[in-house]
Structure formats: structure tokens, C-alpha cells
Length: 185
Image (tube, rainbow, N blue to C red; front, side, top):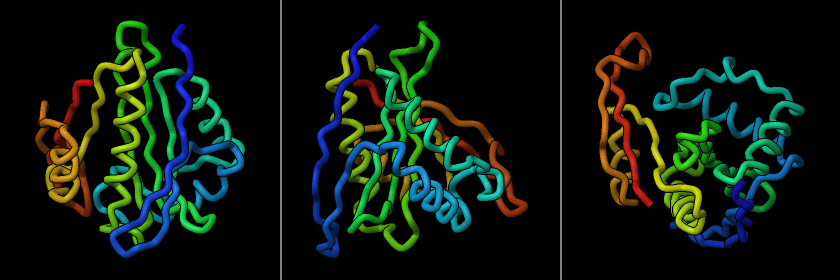
């Protein structure tokens, strides 16, 4: 089994000059992380999950954080400002031996903090960590075809489109195509 690669916290300035720390989540973050996820799920039209469908308890969220922490091909980072969690990104590696070199990315940003460069910071840190992880060779994500800012961000970070499924998501009575994007490490 591969060893766990530690993540070193980093401090940055947003586009508006606010300080943001990117660090690995801990079980103590469970409540704040739950609150963040419920906030952006309630406000989004680009994540295929309603806030009421995310039913984790504090204990389950803490267990999720622990599970990701102990797997060598997984990482859960948070963006934090003055003790408030304002964004998260998870890298969920496959548990299947034949696919353990792959990991899926999921990300969310508090609506008040969007368009401040938080997504770029989170992605940069995941990519840096992943390139140092000898187990990982391919990262992938799924995005609404209508999420043009997200697609631009992923392309800027080196992802390329690798798949497309028509009418995959149903958002507000309208079908939306799914784009799969990958980056080879």
C-alpha cells in the first residue's frame, strides 16, 4: 500500500485582498463543512444534488473526512477565512485496484466567495499534491455543459474534455448535457 502524502497548509490573498488558508480538513471541521455544503447546494444550479438530498449528520461528515484522510489516493481540502470555511474540494480516489491510479474531483464555494479565485487556489493545491502522489496518474471531473465559467477554469488548469453525455442532468425542468474532463499527471 502506498504511504499517505501529507498536505502542507498554504496562505493566499484573494482578488479582493482577503487572506485565505488552504488546508486539509479534520473531523473537527465536520459541522462547518456541512453548513458550507448545504449553503452552496441550496444556491447552485451547477451541482447535481439538492441541499435536502445531502443528509450527512455531523458524525457521518466527520467519518467521511477520516475516510478520505486515511486513503493514499484521496484528499479533502478546505479554504478558510478567519475561521470560516468558504470552500472545499475533494479528491476521491478509486478503491478498486485496477483504478486506484484515478481520482474524481468535486468542489464547492460559498456563494459570497465565488469569483474571488478560491476555486483556482483549491484546484492548484489538489494538482500540486496529486503530482507528488506516486499512486495517482489521472484526475477527472464531471461538469454541466452550461457551466462555462467552470469549464474555462478547468481548461486553464490543464484539464481537457474527454466525454460528453446528452441530457444527463435535469435542472429546473431543463435537460443539460454532461462534460467529463481529465488531466493526466
